[in-house]
Amino acid sequence: MQSKGSNVRLSGMVIRSRISTLFLSMFATCASLYVAGRLWQDSQNRVYLANELDRLTGQGRSVISVDDSWKILECREQQKKLSGLEMELAAARQEGFVSKHLSETNKKTKRPLVVIGILTGFGRRSNRDAIRKAWMGTGVTLKKMEEKSIIVRFVIGRSSNRGDGLDRSIDSENKQTNDIFILENHVEAPEELPNKTKLFFAHAADNWDADFYAKVNDDVYVNVDALQNTLAAHLDKPRVYMGCMKSGEVFSERGHKWYEPDWWKFGDGKSDHLISNTPLSYFRHASGEMFVISQALAKFVSINRSFLRAYAHDDISVGSWFIGVDVNHVDERKFCCSSWSSELYVRVYDLVFEDSIVYSSGIDKSIAHWMVLYQ
Image (cartoon, rainbow, N blue to C red; front, side, top):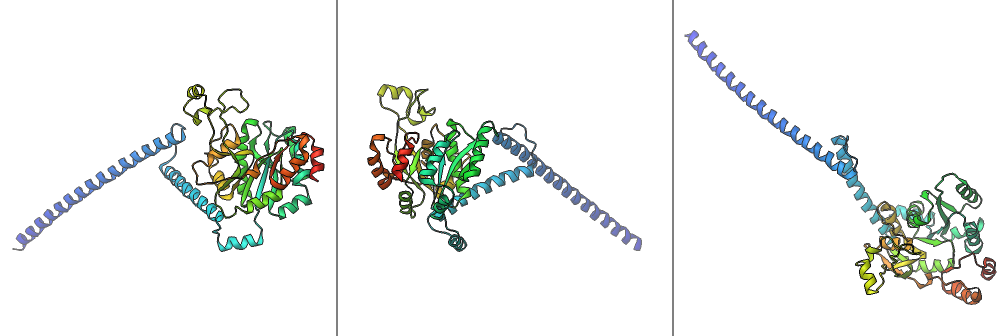
């Protein structure tokens, strides 16, 4: 009896063992299929990411790992978010919404009203000296102007032959005057003026926390007191783009002084323009002698400097950057320049230094006479 019972129990154990083995085998098979599927999906993701990176970077076959690929994509998303937050912060500052800490900091360090960048070039020392004597000042005089919340600097890039006599001359001049803002990564060339203007606004916004940033040519005299009063009246307006607004003709003839290589973007076509005898026109923009943008717009230029399109002229380029942005275009006629005439000293004096802000003299003409008049 015991032997028979033992045989029955042994037979039951064998059956249960076979069932357990069968279940384990089925589980192992399912697990293997699941792992294989995930590995296949992962390999597909690798191929997709590699192809996407190749397409975005244009560098051919990618050797970046999947982890690095995800990091790159995440960094891009974070960069977009950061750019958006910086824009919102700049706009908030412009509209007066600042933190308590920033408010306390501003009380300790007076915030500049405007940073004026006088765009100059090699071989223009006489122009710079004339401006220093006329309205900008040097040394203590320049320091007093900064105490009045107005910062003025000449702006210049580097020579194409870096370190040559042109660069050394500017470095030597700057050691004497300490009033030149050198764009180290910009190469001086007439056709690069739009990019130079863009870099000035970008670097000025990065270096000075001012309310406004102004670009001025180095043949323009500025009535600083009039400029200060005019800008103070616009402190409550966000995203200000101020200047002598105009809309000039687009010249499509190669070799013309104001030739615009991208003329076709401003009309239906060259043939239609010639047949209809109706000149192509630029959009409304501030004249290039001098224009001002507020801090939010300067931050906008700084953040997007790599993507902002430059046309043949700097005033057109700046105007184009703000076409699709919610900007307050301020047509300030005091920014409009008068033309020089040696017979009109008195009339020019009345117009420029009492009513207007800027005056384009061409500086090379009768600097001494103008200086006596100014004093």
